[in-house]
Image 1 (cartoon, rainbow over the protein chains, first blue to last red):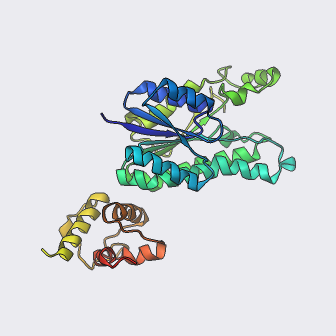
Image 2: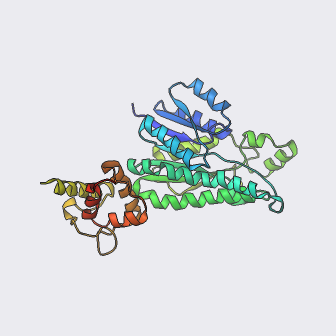
Length: 243
Length: 87
């Protein structure tokens, strides 16, 4: 059996669950480590449905010690990690003039520091393997920079730049690092929109609909797969045509 | 081949295989600088791979950048660090 260990952070969210389900459906060789921090109801259900094929791992992405502990657990079980999907994220939208410094710090910490800590934590294993795929989930906010998201947009733009810089550092070792920028996707975050806001957002999307989590997951699987072997440092927008 | 020669030979194979060098292990001198234009020409990414490989295969932990710079100077300095009594 050629087991392929995959770690998804923020696995309990809509995107994380869709990615995990897609990896599990893709191949019986895929083993999915479900990185969870506080919320875990969805991943517990998924793990119960797929015994022996996925496992929860406690992971506070903003804490380097938590990453080290998670990697010790993963490597003890599988001796390697093939794919890291840095998917965990957090919002705290506000106009900059009214944004609390704690909101700025928290959003930067989870969205940007978390990706840095994650990439750094997997480096020894992936360098040693001479193989590995890192997929960072950024956001369309990284390029559109909407008002009210100075913290989130700055963090996600940082993720894009980190992705491109790291991709150059590790390309010849055999690692690829890519970013995905989802636009409006039907998840718990967009479910909180009122009808008027949702309709306005839809009117700005050339496809006139929000994306499905599975449509983002499909891109993650592609970038993690053999067919993407020559793609690194790329930033893929998945947004129904916004620009 | 004594233990020291065998270790240095192993290190040269490790360099060639892990860093995918386009030379043979025998072409690397024991005292040849590994980094810089006057030596083997390795760079910081090579150093990164070398640090990981040395820890994996020889248990050699390099505490900081300065220690790494001195240790990774030549095959001889790496071999000396591996065989040095552990504190």
